[in-house]
Image 1 (cartoon, rainbow, N blue to C red):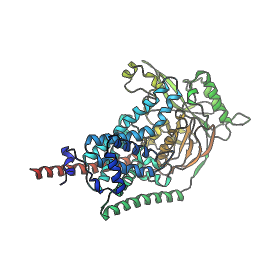
Image 2: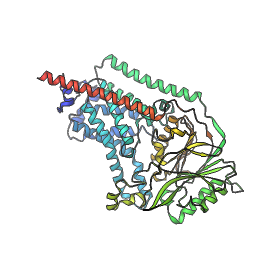
Image 3: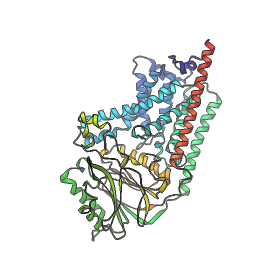
Length: 553
């Protein structure tokens, strides 16, 4: 029994790594990190997290993950205490999120309510909080660390458990899920249709972490055989995905012609009172094109993005703006737009971020109020405390109220769809009402906050997975891009890139048959398997600790 074995539960400050077993370049790296000053380990941890960021859109450089995850295994191997493991994990998480979420800071330059100088503090604060999940992953992995290749499985299991936690706790933030690195590698992304994004994440972390066996010498042949088997499994899944794409061309409902309007209104100008009418006229002009009758001719469904209309009375009976929009529509056609609305209550007014659908006579057929709001952007958590500190400006001074439920919207002559506003589309298993399954997904969003950063591309990549998981086409209307029509396999059939002005015309792709098991069920199966695995490691740790105590007695 080694000291590393007994330290699992007794808390002995021992390192589970025997450094001379590392291959020569790795041993040299470890010796360099161990030398003074002590900032070298945190630096390597930060760089490992930053390297992992390159795996996600828009770079989609998955070899970055092939280096980052083995480096993380090495860092846990090198940690001499649970506190040090936690520290290494925090720096790795800080590297991942401070680089990967730089788009958050850009939003501070797009408003007058909050000084732009706060942008770095906002990025570092959010990254620091998100890094706690990675820190907890390293800490828990070190506490349960085992020798040999099983520690790769342990690390992947714990990483995924905390990835689940990050996606659900405190309203959830499922950004940079490991499996989402395949958003632009569609053959591999097809595995999400079977496993869900979380199952694909688990397989991704396991495969890339397994490459850590190449860092050490004197491995048994079975270890290399296991690595090869894992790589073949993943390659086989990607090959199946390629065949799935090749065997299934995009099919369209030619009776449903779409027009997505991307007016490219700059966020800093969006809510200026003197420009609001100009923004509306710009959307109108793009919708009509050069049609001499002033109509959106040949368009069955006209779609404007989130808050394309900046008037809170759009849903009122005498709304002039809604009447003007309806005049563009041909008989039997419909328009959809995002706009704020308000409702009077006994305590005042509630404001909602809403989507409206209406016909050529201006009759409202449907309304949807966004139910999953962005914390600090659309509502203020701990509102009483933060208002006392004068920070209500983070929401522009007025917070939105949340809608009550998801819904499926039906318009005559148009297949039913699930409305999703902004980042509601990033939550797997929460984009369709299973009791009333739609035929397609509609995501209207305002990505004007994020400019020419990586944010809009990452948002698009996450949205793509909802189409793959649900077998439903996704129509995405974004204020400044990326607007896109995506088929049920995740293929982009038409798009307008960031910072472009124009319209996107396309027929509606057809949906696939409903999957045998829902995305939520697949996610639950993944979670149960992860919990079973970590329970097995816990039981093993307890047994080893008891044997160590018995041997010492």
